[in-house]
Length: 95
Image (cartoon, rainbow, N blue to C red; front, top):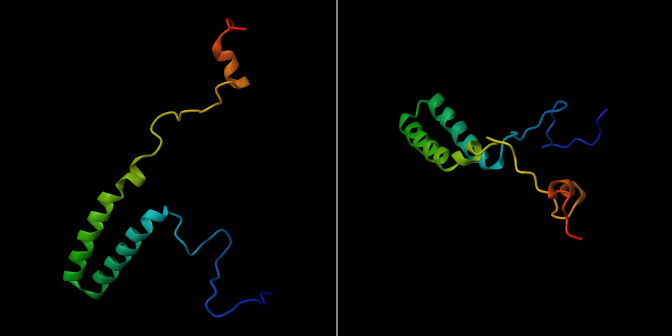
C-alpha cells in the first residue's frame, strides 16, 4: 500500500515515464506538434498554418540532432604509451 502519495504526484506503470524518452532538444518540437494537433481538433485553420510553419523551421534547425548518427566505425581512443598500443608499434622499439 502506498502511503506517501500527495495531490499532484505522478503515478506510472513499471518501466514507464511521463517524460518522453527523446533528446531534450526535441521536447519543444514535440510540444509544438501537440499544439498543432489541438489546433486541428478545434478547427483553427489559421493557427494550424502558423504552427505548421513553426514546426518546419524547428525541424530544419534541429535536424542535426537526428541526422548525425553512427554511419561508420567509431574511432577508438587509447593512451599513447599503453599496453594496448604496444603491439602496434612493432618489435623494433628504441631502447
